[in-house]
Image (cartoon, rainbow, N blue to C red; front, side):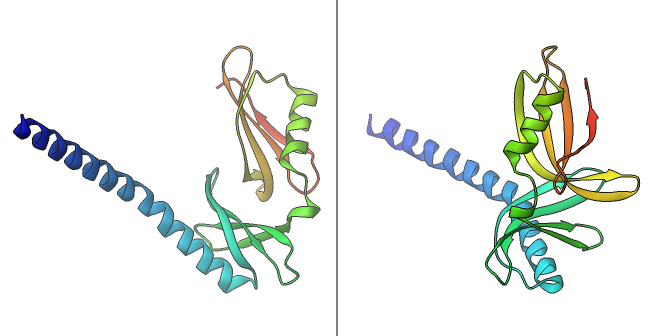
Length: 161
């Protein structure tokens, strides 16, 4: 009986070790990207206190995060993965996530909001900071809706995927 208990404990320990290893290997590229993004932002700006890192893959990949400027105001930062170009916007000068959702609800009738995140929309060969809203409609199809971060205007919609 003691052998079975010891074998059970050993099995659980091995499985736990494998799962932890898989998890650590899975998050390692994201941690490396975050470190790279912070270094690029520090090189190009005088921002600090970086947090809320995410990857945005649209026409190009952007690292998106929040930081603080010299006045300690919250700032959104977009770093182009390929070129290193840094775009910053004061959080208080743009529209909020809720305002972007309200814009969507004025025009569309989503049945489920899946995700709302900051991204970059390419309009007429120009990248513009935007809220990307990923949702399902009543037909259960996937849709994307982009709202300009600066103006609150609809930039584009991709429907019925």
